[in-house]
Structure formats: C-alpha cells, structure tokens
Length: 301
Image (cartoon, rainbow, N blue to C red; front, side, top):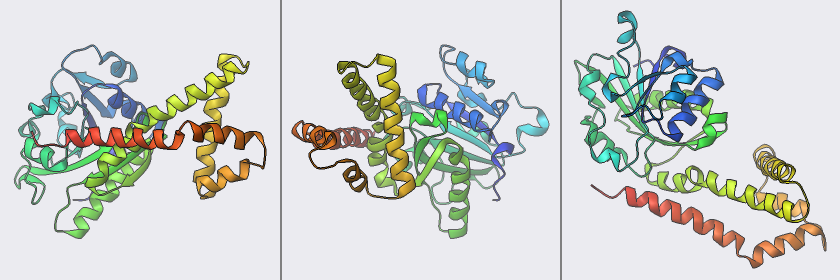
C-alpha cells in the first residue's frame, strides 16, 4: 500500500499511562499531528483526564477508538494503534481486530517491553505470512518499538523492529513510514528484534539512570555549597551539553573526556573517585539487569 502523510492518519493509544502520554504529548508538540487525530482508551477515567486536556478523544473501550469520527472519515485512511499496556495485561485479550474489519489498513505498534512480535501477532490473530487477517477486509501491519519518556519533549529514542514479508519493496515502504511516524518523537533506530531487550535496558530504562546521575551530581553541588535549584540546572545542562558534544562531533566519548582531563587537574581527580567507586561497572550492570528483566517478559506465556 501507499502510506499517507501522518497528518492524514488517525492514531489510537490502548493504555493511558506515562509512556502513552509522553508519546501523545510529543506528537502534538512537534506539530506533526493534531490532538484531534489522537484517541486514547483505558478501563477507567483516572488517567484519561490529562489526555482530554491535551485535546484527545478518550474512551473506556479499546475497540472503540475511532467510532467518534464522522462517517466519511471513519474508514478512509490508515489507523495506527499503539499498544501501551503492561506486558502482564497483554496475557488477556486487549484488542479485537475484528472491530477494525472495515478499515483499509491498520498499523499496530507495540510499546510493551519484552513482548516479541511473534506473541503480538498470535494474540492479535494476524496472519504473519502476509500481515493480513483477511484479504477482503484490509491489511494489518505489526511493529514493535521501545521508546523512552523523552518523547514528550521530542528528544526520545525509539528502537524499532517490525514484521517483514517476502516482498522487499513492501517492507521498505513500511520501514520508511515508521521512520516518518516516529521521528517527531526523537531519534529512530531500526534494530533486529533480538536486540530490542538491549534497547529497553539502554534507553527505555536508561533515561532513569541518567536522571539518577543528574540528581547525584546536583547533590554533589549542594554538598559543595550551591543552592539546590542552581545545582540541578547546572547538572542537567552539563549532561545535555555532553550528549550534544558526542552527537555533533562524532568523537568517541573517551576522547572528549580526555580533552577535559588535564594532568594533575580537577577532572582527573574526580574521574579517579568515579573509578574507585566502580562507576563504569555499576552503570553496565544497570543496563544488563534491565535488559535481562525485559528478556524475562519475552518468555512464552
């Protein structure tokens, strides 16, 4: 199929948690998608109020995401559904694809940690051979992403894998559309599905590790006499600046670090303290631990 521009699509979120809100906010703030294009479902209204305030349509029925659309628009264009429920919730049916039988095409994108494409396809009863549930009822495409909450400010990372078919051109068009769809949220990296758990550990969970680093640096500034607000602002900007230096210069982080550390200076003394505390090993262990937890979710159920 020929994919439409994303401002012509309708996007639904099954689940109204933190990640769904980060993505919805990111889409709207990017200007690529209007809030009126977004629909969100959750079993209770507790988390839906902030989506309503954003301008999204909300519902308590996962299979009723697009019923509010006017008749001419309801079955006119591609529908995109992000599955933003917890992996354990997905053990039960959360989406009846028969409810979308009249749609010309539906793209289902899982945001669930650890739940592999094979499981998603099986639970949605999608034909993995050609990504169609029925040739007479329209096509279903299935992808899996691992974003992080920085999507809310259009600075996230999305690891992406998707169900491929034998037709190379068909898969390339799907990949190109996924890139266009997700780029407003930040950086989009396509990886082999077996690498998705590592993406979860490095980025999905890793953003929390960076928050912890910022907090610890700010505490250090506070200990040395800086006001809390000043220390936090300086720590956050230092991390942001370091990240931009890595991205924009293309240099290895160690080379950039060595540019700062002069013989006998303050930086090398600080780096020595980090080394004595096992900083590198602790961070690597954190990524490994989060990755392994994601792998546990991948076990058959």
